Image 1 (cartoon, one colour):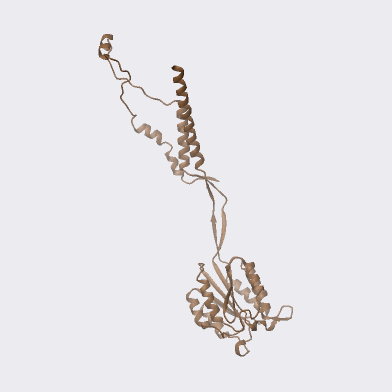
Image 2 (tube, helix red, strand yellow):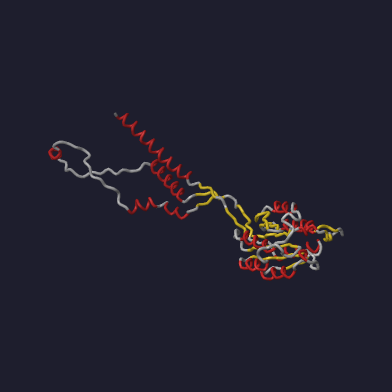
Length: 329
């Protein structure tokens, strides 16, 4: 639609009439006829000299052109614009970071698929986590893999297809045979420092206990809490195992509790899928809708028309005056 950005400037339209009404006309005295012995001639003719005056009046074409030009200039000052249809942008208000344990133990085949077959832990994780990412259309998602150390695989992005591709390409042992949960939380804290969203969620999935971190997981979780990061911990290992393969449920529970998150244990693929369904419910989509309407400035059209109208009138008037003088001569 069309609109005026400064419509109050239209009150300037009657300004020329107010000026003409309030201010007196300009007067200038000059001798119109120079005649030697003027007093003697006037006395001989019996005429008493008086002051004369010539009042210059606008012609009708001049009045019309100047009035229209003034209206066009005031219209240009009011900034006419064409407002285009609104452009809407959805801005996510939450960043979700997935930290996946890719130690060598993730290749263990002890997960029951819905069809009754036994599959490797990493295969179940790929299926369930990729489905979780596909449902988070309104959130930015990042990806971390950790083993001997923690590595960022994907930055926070709305390109969920990229994240799903990275998840599909994950392999057990790609990050080393051991588990560095504390370092993964530390890397997540550094990645969240570069975001400005109000909600920050870290989902950690691991099947063992921490054996390689330089920072204890509980200490890293305490720092995450101070940074406003909520950690949900998901365990899929064997709590009855020994050594590095034993799932440290106590540490995972404390990490989740200290940061305001939850701890889950998934014994098979169905349980794991149910866990991510719960995460969907407790982290509903949080978005901010931004709307912007592009505006095209049109002031140059009435301004150019007004200037062109005045220029054309005065050029033609001057030309007509020259022609009249030549004819009179």
